Amino acid sequence: MEDWISDNIEKAVGVARLGLCDRCLGRMFGKEGTGMTNDVRGAMLRGALVSEGRNTPPLETCPLCGNIFELLPRFAEAVSDAVQSVESDNFLVGSKVDPAVAAMEKGIAEEFGLEKSEPIKTELNREIGKLSIPLVGRDVEFTNPQVVACVDTRFADVELDVKPIFIAGRYNKLSRDIPQTVWPCRMCKGKGCQRCKGTGKMYQTSVQEIIGDIALRMSGGSEHFFHGMGREDIDALMLGEGRPFVLEISAPKTRQIDLEALSLEANLSELAQFKGLHYVQREAVQRYKGADPDKIYRARVKSEGKVNKEKLIGVALAFKDVRIDQRTPTRVEHRRADLVRKRWIRWVEAEPVDDCVFDLTLETESGTYVKEFVSGDGGRSKPNFSESLGVPCVVQELDVLAIEYKEPECE
Image (cartoon, rainbow, N blue to C red; front, side):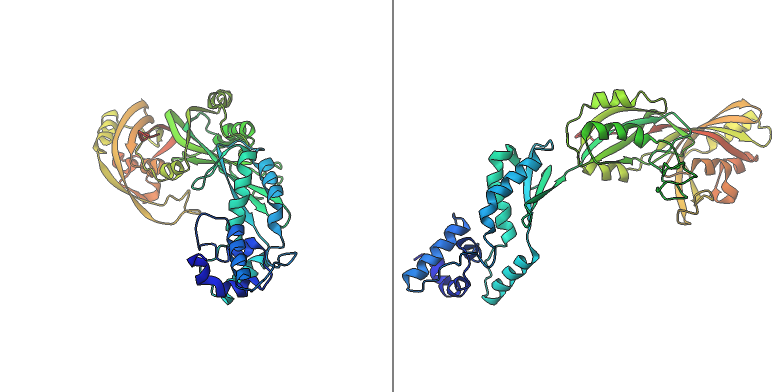
Protein backbone atom coordinates (compact mmCIF):
# COMPACT_ATOMS: atom_id res chain seq x y z
CA MET A 1 0.00 0.00 0.00
CA GLU A 2 1.40 3.39 -0.97
CA ASP A 3 2.27 5.77 1.85
CA TRP A 4 -0.25 8.43 0.88
CA ILE A 5 -3.02 5.79 1.00
CA SER A 6 -2.01 4.41 4.37
CA ASP A 7 -1.74 7.95 5.75
CA ASN A 8 -5.33 8.70 4.70
CA ILE A 9 -7.03 5.30 5.04
CA GLU A 10 -9.16 6.23 8.07
CA LYS A 11 -10.38 9.45 6.49
CA ALA A 12 -11.07 7.55 3.28
CA VAL A 13 -13.32 5.11 5.16
CA GLY A 14 -15.60 7.87 6.35
CA VAL A 15 -15.72 9.61 2.96
CA ALA A 16 -16.29 6.37 1.04
CA ARG A 17 -19.26 5.45 3.26
CA LEU A 18 -21.09 8.44 1.76
CA GLY A 19 -21.33 6.43 -1.47
CA LEU A 20 -19.26 8.83 -3.57
CA CYS A 21 -18.13 7.82 -7.06
CA ASP A 22 -14.45 7.11 -7.66
CA ARG A 23 -13.87 10.60 -9.08
CA CYS A 24 -15.38 12.40 -6.10
CA LEU A 25 -13.66 10.07 -3.63
CA GLY A 26 -10.32 10.61 -5.35
CA ARG A 27 -10.86 14.36 -5.58
CA MET A 28 -11.21 14.58 -1.79
CA PHE A 29 -7.55 13.54 -1.72
CA GLY A 30 -6.70 15.25 -5.02
CA LYS A 31 -3.35 16.68 -3.90
CA GLU A 32 -2.12 13.34 -2.58
CA GLY A 33 -0.04 11.12 -4.86
CA THR A 34 1.09 12.16 -8.32
CA GLY A 35 0.69 11.17 -11.94
CA MET A 36 -2.91 9.99 -11.79
CA THR A 37 -6.44 11.22 -12.38
CA ASN A 38 -8.96 11.48 -9.57
CA ASP A 39 -10.95 8.46 -10.72
CA VAL A 40 -7.78 6.34 -10.57
CA ARG A 41 -6.93 7.84 -7.18
CA GLY A 42 -10.43 7.03 -5.92
CA ALA A 43 -10.28 3.46 -7.26
CA MET A 44 -6.94 2.90 -5.48
CA LEU A 45 -8.40 4.13 -2.19
CA ARG A 46 -11.48 1.96 -2.57
CA GLY A 47 -9.31 -1.05 -3.45
CA ALA A 48 -7.22 -0.50 -0.33
CA LEU A 49 -10.39 -0.44 1.76
CA VAL A 50 -11.62 -3.69 0.21
CA SER A 51 -8.26 -5.35 0.93
CA GLU A 52 -8.75 -4.48 4.58
CA GLY A 53 -12.25 -5.95 4.57
CA ARG A 54 -13.99 -2.57 4.58
CA ASN A 55 -15.95 -2.70 1.36
CA THR A 56 -17.68 0.64 0.65
CA PRO A 57 -19.07 0.51 -2.89
CA PRO A 58 -20.33 3.68 -4.58
CA LEU A 59 -24.02 4.36 -4.93
CA GLU A 60 -25.58 4.09 -8.38
CA THR A 61 -25.90 7.87 -8.46
CA CYS A 62 -23.13 9.78 -6.74
CA PRO A 63 -24.68 11.88 -3.95
CA LEU A 64 -22.15 14.63 -4.57
CA CYS A 65 -21.71 15.10 -8.32
CA GLY A 66 -24.84 13.29 -9.53
CA ASN A 67 -22.69 11.43 -12.07
CA ILE A 68 -21.97 14.67 -13.85
CA PHE A 69 -18.65 13.36 -15.17
CA GLU A 70 -20.54 11.02 -17.47
CA LEU A 71 -21.49 14.18 -19.39
CA LEU A 72 -17.89 15.24 -20.09
CA PRO A 73 -18.09 14.39 -23.83
CA ARG A 74 -21.29 16.44 -24.14
CA PHE A 75 -19.69 19.39 -22.37
CA ALA A 76 -16.63 19.18 -24.62
CA GLU A 77 -18.76 19.19 -27.76
CA ALA A 78 -20.67 22.23 -26.50
CA VAL A 79 -17.35 24.00 -25.84
CA SER A 80 -16.11 23.14 -29.33
CA ASP A 81 -19.29 24.44 -31.00
CA ALA A 82 -19.11 27.70 -29.05
CA VAL A 83 -15.39 28.38 -29.46
CA GLN A 84 -15.46 27.63 -33.17
CA SER A 85 -18.08 30.36 -33.63
CA VAL A 86 -15.35 32.96 -33.05
CA GLU A 87 -11.82 33.47 -34.30
CA SER A 88 -8.98 32.95 -31.84
CA ASP A 89 -5.50 31.50 -31.53
CA ASN A 90 -6.23 29.84 -28.19
CA PHE A 91 -8.92 29.17 -25.60
CA LEU A 92 -9.50 28.13 -22.01
CA VAL A 93 -12.34 26.23 -20.34
CA GLY A 94 -14.11 27.36 -17.20
CA SER A 95 -17.22 26.03 -15.50
CA LYS A 96 -20.15 26.80 -13.23
CA VAL A 97 -21.46 24.16 -10.86
CA ASP A 98 -24.64 23.92 -8.84
CA PRO A 99 -24.06 25.96 -5.65
CA ALA A 100 -25.52 23.06 -3.64
CA VAL A 101 -22.80 20.76 -4.99
CA ALA A 102 -20.06 23.22 -4.07
CA ALA A 103 -21.53 23.67 -0.59
CA MET A 104 -21.80 19.90 -0.02
CA GLU A 105 -18.23 19.39 -1.20
CA LYS A 106 -16.98 22.06 1.19
CA GLY A 107 -18.94 20.48 4.04
CA ILE A 108 -17.39 17.05 3.43
CA ALA A 109 -13.89 18.50 3.36
CA GLU A 110 -14.48 20.33 6.64
CA GLU A 111 -16.15 17.35 8.35
CA PHE A 112 -13.30 14.95 7.62
CA GLY A 113 -10.46 17.47 7.79
CA LEU A 114 -9.46 17.04 4.16
CA GLU A 115 -6.80 19.68 3.62
CA LYS A 116 -5.61 18.31 0.28
CA SER A 117 -8.89 18.07 -1.60
CA GLU A 118 -9.49 19.57 -5.02
CA PRO A 119 -12.61 21.61 -5.95
CA ILE A 120 -14.97 19.96 -8.42
CA LYS A 121 -14.73 23.04 -10.66
CA THR A 122 -10.99 22.50 -11.04
CA GLU A 123 -11.49 18.90 -12.13
CA LEU A 124 -14.31 19.79 -14.50
CA ASN A 125 -12.24 22.56 -16.11
CA ARG A 126 -9.31 20.21 -16.60
CA GLU A 127 -11.25 17.20 -17.88
CA ILE A 128 -13.54 19.17 -20.20
CA GLY A 129 -10.50 21.02 -21.48
CA LYS A 130 -8.64 17.80 -22.25
CA LEU A 131 -11.55 16.45 -24.29
CA SER A 132 -12.11 19.82 -26.00
CA ILE A 133 -8.59 20.29 -27.37
CA PRO A 134 -8.83 17.85 -30.29
CA LEU A 135 -12.38 19.01 -31.07
CA VAL A 136 -11.55 22.73 -31.06
CA GLY A 137 -8.16 22.34 -32.72
CA ARG A 138 -6.60 25.31 -30.92
CA ASP A 139 -4.04 25.68 -28.17
CA VAL A 140 -5.02 26.04 -24.53
CA GLU A 141 -3.76 29.27 -22.94
CA PHE A 142 -3.89 29.56 -19.15
CA THR A 143 -2.38 33.01 -18.61
CA ASN A 144 -3.93 35.25 -21.24
CA PRO A 145 -6.58 33.36 -23.23
CA GLN A 146 -8.32 35.07 -26.12
CA VAL A 147 -11.52 33.11 -25.43
CA VAL A 148 -12.81 31.55 -22.22
CA ALA A 149 -15.63 29.04 -22.66
CA CYS A 150 -17.54 28.79 -19.39
CA VAL A 151 -19.72 25.68 -19.18
CA ASP A 152 -22.80 25.84 -16.97
CA THR A 153 -22.82 22.18 -16.01
CA ARG A 154 -26.43 22.33 -14.85
CA PHE A 155 -27.69 22.89 -18.40
CA ALA A 156 -24.65 22.18 -20.64
CA ASP A 157 -24.83 25.80 -21.79
CA VAL A 158 -21.63 27.56 -22.80
CA GLU A 159 -21.03 31.27 -22.36
CA LEU A 160 -18.07 32.79 -24.18
CA ASP A 161 -15.92 35.51 -22.70
CA VAL A 162 -14.04 36.84 -25.72
CA LYS A 163 -11.03 39.07 -25.11
CA PRO A 164 -11.38 42.48 -26.80
CA ILE A 165 -9.11 43.58 -29.61
CA PHE A 166 -7.31 46.90 -29.43
CA ILE A 167 -6.39 48.99 -32.48
CA ALA A 168 -4.15 52.02 -32.07
CA GLY A 169 -3.49 54.86 -34.48
CA ARG A 170 -3.81 58.61 -34.86
CA TYR A 171 -6.75 60.68 -36.01
CA ASN A 172 -7.28 64.11 -37.50
CA LYS A 173 -10.55 65.85 -36.66
CA LEU A 174 -11.52 68.06 -39.57
CA SER A 175 -14.86 69.35 -38.32
CA ARG A 176 -15.72 71.84 -35.59
CA ASP A 177 -19.12 70.21 -35.15
CA ILE A 178 -18.34 66.70 -33.89
CA PRO A 179 -16.98 65.40 -30.57
CA GLN A 180 -14.25 62.85 -30.11
CA THR A 181 -16.52 60.23 -28.52
CA VAL A 182 -20.21 59.37 -28.44
CA TRP A 183 -21.99 62.08 -26.46
CA PRO A 184 -25.29 60.91 -24.88
CA CYS A 185 -28.16 63.38 -24.95
CA ARG A 186 -28.24 65.52 -21.80
CA MET A 187 -32.03 65.50 -21.74
CA CYS A 188 -32.80 61.78 -22.05
CA LYS A 189 -29.42 60.29 -21.04
CA GLY A 190 -29.26 58.24 -24.23
CA LYS A 191 -32.82 56.89 -24.21
CA GLY A 192 -34.06 59.00 -27.13
CA CYS A 193 -36.23 62.10 -26.93
CA GLN A 194 -37.56 65.03 -28.96
CA ARG A 195 -34.44 67.09 -28.38
CA CYS A 196 -32.14 64.42 -29.91
CA LYS A 197 -34.74 63.25 -32.44
CA GLY A 198 -34.71 59.79 -30.94
CA THR A 199 -30.98 59.20 -31.45
CA GLY A 200 -30.07 59.42 -27.77
CA LYS A 201 -27.06 61.55 -28.74
CA MET A 202 -26.12 65.22 -28.58
CA TYR A 203 -24.34 64.97 -31.94
CA GLN A 204 -25.16 62.80 -34.93
CA THR A 205 -21.69 61.28 -35.10
CA SER A 206 -18.23 61.42 -33.54
CA VAL A 207 -14.64 60.49 -34.31
CA GLN A 208 -15.28 57.28 -32.37
CA GLU A 209 -18.31 56.29 -34.42
CA ILE A 210 -16.75 57.10 -37.79
CA ILE A 211 -14.13 54.40 -37.34
CA GLY A 212 -15.71 52.33 -34.57
CA ASP A 213 -18.90 51.43 -36.42
CA ILE A 214 -16.88 50.13 -39.37
CA ALA A 215 -14.52 48.13 -37.15
CA LEU A 216 -17.51 46.69 -35.30
CA ARG A 217 -19.06 45.48 -38.54
CA MET A 218 -15.77 44.02 -39.81
CA SER A 219 -15.02 42.19 -36.55
CA GLY A 220 -18.55 41.12 -35.65
CA GLY A 221 -18.00 42.61 -32.19
CA SER A 222 -20.67 43.75 -29.75
CA GLU A 223 -19.52 47.26 -28.79
CA HIS A 224 -16.72 49.75 -29.34
CA PHE A 225 -14.91 52.06 -26.93
CA PHE A 226 -12.58 54.93 -27.78
CA HIS A 227 -9.53 55.81 -25.68
CA GLY A 228 -7.91 59.05 -26.84
CA MET A 229 -4.70 60.60 -25.55
CA GLY A 230 -6.67 63.51 -24.21
CA ARG A 231 -9.31 65.27 -26.27
CA GLU A 232 -9.84 68.54 -28.08
CA ASP A 233 -12.89 70.78 -27.70
CA ILE A 234 -15.75 70.02 -30.07
CA ASP A 235 -15.13 73.29 -31.93
CA ALA A 236 -11.40 72.62 -32.27
CA LEU A 237 -9.65 70.83 -35.13
CA MET A 238 -6.99 68.16 -34.65
CA LEU A 239 -4.42 68.65 -37.39
CA GLY A 240 -0.78 67.68 -38.04
CA GLU A 241 0.13 64.07 -37.36
CA GLY A 242 -3.04 63.62 -35.36
CA ARG A 243 -3.98 62.55 -31.85
CA PRO A 244 -3.03 59.03 -30.66
CA PHE A 245 -5.95 56.78 -29.77
CA VAL A 246 -6.85 53.18 -29.04
CA LEU A 247 -10.08 51.69 -30.38
CA GLU A 248 -11.39 48.79 -28.29
CA ILE A 249 -13.76 46.23 -29.83
CA SER A 250 -15.48 43.93 -27.35
CA ALA A 251 -16.45 40.31 -28.06
CA PRO A 252 -15.10 40.19 -31.65
CA LYS A 253 -15.93 37.14 -33.73
CA THR A 254 -13.02 37.99 -36.05
CA ARG A 255 -9.80 39.05 -34.34
CA GLN A 256 -7.71 39.87 -37.41
CA ILE A 257 -9.52 42.42 -39.51
CA ASP A 258 -7.90 44.19 -42.45
CA LEU A 259 -6.65 47.42 -40.92
CA GLU A 260 -5.79 48.92 -44.29
CA ALA A 261 -9.35 48.32 -45.46
CA LEU A 262 -10.64 49.78 -42.19
CA SER A 263 -8.54 52.91 -42.69
CA LEU A 264 -9.59 53.32 -46.31
CA GLU A 265 -13.29 53.04 -45.51
CA ALA A 266 -13.11 55.31 -42.46
CA ASN A 267 -11.19 57.91 -44.46
CA LEU A 268 -14.08 58.29 -46.87
CA SER A 269 -15.44 60.60 -44.20
CA GLU A 270 -14.86 64.34 -44.61
CA LEU A 271 -15.13 64.84 -40.86
CA ALA A 272 -12.15 62.80 -39.62
CA GLN A 273 -9.17 60.89 -40.97
CA PHE A 274 -7.19 58.00 -39.52
CA LYS A 275 -3.63 56.77 -40.01
CA GLY A 276 -1.06 54.31 -38.68
CA LEU A 277 -3.54 51.68 -37.52
CA HIS A 278 -1.94 48.74 -35.74
CA TYR A 279 -2.86 46.16 -33.12
CA VAL A 280 -1.80 46.71 -29.50
CA GLN A 281 -2.33 44.98 -26.18
CA ARG A 282 -4.73 46.16 -23.48
CA GLU A 283 -1.85 47.81 -21.63
CA ALA A 284 -1.69 50.48 -24.34
CA VAL A 285 -4.97 51.95 -23.11
CA GLN A 286 -3.52 52.90 -19.74
CA ARG A 287 -0.32 54.10 -21.36
CA TYR A 288 -2.21 56.43 -23.66
CA LYS A 289 -4.54 57.60 -20.88
CA GLY A 290 -1.61 58.24 -18.57
CA ALA A 291 0.51 60.12 -21.10
CA ASP A 292 0.81 63.88 -20.67
CA PRO A 293 2.64 65.15 -23.77
CA ASP A 294 3.05 68.80 -24.57
CA LYS A 295 0.79 70.15 -27.31
CA ILE A 296 1.17 72.77 -30.00
CA TYR A 297 -1.86 74.93 -30.81
CA ARG A 298 -2.85 77.60 -33.27
CA ALA A 299 -5.44 80.10 -32.08
CA ARG A 300 -7.26 82.72 -34.14
CA VAL A 301 -7.75 85.55 -31.64
CA LYS A 302 -9.94 88.67 -31.79
CA SER A 303 -9.24 91.69 -29.60
CA GLU A 304 -11.72 94.34 -28.45
CA GLY A 305 -9.50 97.10 -29.81
CA LYS A 306 -6.62 97.69 -32.15
CA VAL A 307 -3.41 95.92 -31.27
CA ASN A 308 0.07 97.33 -31.80
CA LYS A 309 2.03 94.83 -33.90
CA GLU A 310 5.34 95.32 -32.06
CA LYS A 311 3.71 95.01 -28.65
CA LEU A 312 1.84 91.90 -29.76
CA ILE A 313 5.02 90.18 -30.85
CA GLY A 314 6.83 91.31 -27.71
CA VAL A 315 4.14 89.97 -25.38
CA ALA A 316 4.18 86.66 -27.22
CA LEU A 317 7.95 86.33 -26.89
CA ALA A 318 7.72 87.15 -23.18
CA PHE A 319 5.74 83.96 -22.59
CA LYS A 320 8.83 81.79 -22.78
CA ASP A 321 8.84 79.01 -20.18
CA VAL A 322 6.28 80.80 -18.03
CA ARG A 323 4.32 78.98 -15.36
CA ILE A 324 0.69 80.00 -15.02
CA ASP A 325 -2.05 79.29 -12.49
CA GLN A 326 -5.37 78.19 -13.94
CA ARG A 327 -8.48 77.86 -11.84
CA THR A 328 -11.09 75.52 -13.29
CA PRO A 329 -12.65 77.49 -16.17
CA THR A 330 -16.18 78.80 -15.80
CA ARG A 331 -17.26 76.87 -18.91
CA VAL A 332 -16.46 73.49 -17.31
CA GLU A 333 -16.81 74.19 -13.58
CA HIS A 334 -20.23 72.48 -13.56
CA ARG A 335 -18.58 69.13 -14.29
CA ARG A 336 -15.06 69.45 -12.89
CA ALA A 337 -13.63 70.10 -9.45
CA ASP A 338 -12.84 73.73 -8.67
CA LEU A 339 -9.05 73.55 -8.46
CA VAL A 340 -6.07 75.72 -9.32
CA ARG A 341 -3.76 73.92 -11.72
CA LYS A 342 -0.21 75.02 -12.46
CA ARG A 343 0.78 74.71 -16.12
CA TRP A 344 3.76 75.69 -18.29
CA ILE A 345 3.60 77.85 -21.37
CA ARG A 346 6.67 76.71 -23.32
CA TRP A 347 6.64 79.40 -26.02
CA VAL A 348 4.29 81.66 -27.98
CA GLU A 349 4.54 83.18 -31.44
CA ALA A 350 2.19 85.87 -32.76
CA GLU A 351 1.25 86.87 -36.30
CA PRO A 352 -1.06 89.84 -36.98
CA VAL A 353 -3.96 89.31 -39.38
CA ASP A 354 -5.50 92.79 -39.17
CA ASP A 355 -5.80 95.51 -36.56
CA CYS A 356 -8.04 93.44 -34.26
CA VAL A 357 -7.28 89.86 -35.27
CA PHE A 358 -4.10 87.85 -34.85
CA ASP A 359 -2.92 84.24 -34.75
CA LEU A 360 -1.06 82.70 -31.85
CA THR A 361 0.99 79.53 -32.19
CA LEU A 362 2.03 78.14 -28.82
CA GLU A 363 3.32 75.06 -27.10
CA THR A 364 1.91 74.25 -23.68
CA GLU A 365 2.07 71.61 -21.00
CA SER A 366 -0.61 68.93 -21.18
CA GLY A 367 -3.84 70.03 -19.53
CA THR A 368 -3.46 73.76 -20.26
CA TYR A 369 -6.69 75.62 -21.02
CA VAL A 370 -5.57 77.63 -24.02
CA LYS A 371 -8.76 79.65 -24.48
CA GLU A 372 -8.58 80.76 -20.85
CA PHE A 373 -4.87 81.52 -21.09
CA VAL A 374 -5.68 83.96 -23.89
CA SER A 375 -8.81 85.55 -22.36
CA GLY A 376 -7.88 85.37 -18.70
CA ASP A 377 -11.33 83.94 -17.89
CA GLY A 378 -12.20 86.81 -15.55
CA GLY A 379 -8.93 86.53 -13.68
CA ARG A 380 -9.12 82.77 -13.17
CA SER A 381 -6.04 82.26 -15.37
CA LYS A 382 -2.89 84.22 -14.36
CA PRO A 383 -0.80 85.51 -15.96
CA ASN A 384 -2.75 85.60 -19.20
CA PHE A 385 -2.27 86.99 -22.69
CA SER A 386 -5.05 89.59 -22.59
CA GLU A 387 -3.79 91.14 -19.37
CA SER A 388 -0.21 91.27 -20.66
CA LEU A 389 -1.34 92.81 -23.95
CA GLY A 390 -3.59 95.30 -22.18
CA VAL A 391 -6.52 94.50 -24.46
CA PRO A 392 -9.34 91.96 -23.82
CA CYS A 393 -9.05 89.08 -26.28
CA VAL A 394 -11.01 85.92 -27.05
CA VAL A 395 -10.16 82.83 -29.08
CA GLN A 396 -12.39 82.58 -32.15
CA GLU A 397 -10.96 79.33 -33.48
CA LEU A 398 -8.57 76.80 -32.01
CA ASP A 399 -6.59 74.09 -33.78
CA VAL A 400 -4.33 71.43 -32.26
CA LEU A 401 -1.28 71.21 -34.50
CA ALA A 402 0.76 68.55 -32.72
CA ILE A 403 0.74 66.06 -29.85
CA GLU A 404 4.37 65.68 -28.80
CA TYR A 405 4.25 61.95 -28.18
CA LYS A 406 6.55 59.24 -29.47
CA GLU A 407 5.49 55.60 -29.50
CA PRO A 408 7.72 53.23 -27.50
CA GLU A 409 10.07 51.21 -29.68
CA CYS A 410 8.22 48.02 -28.72
CA GLU A 411 5.01 49.23 -30.38
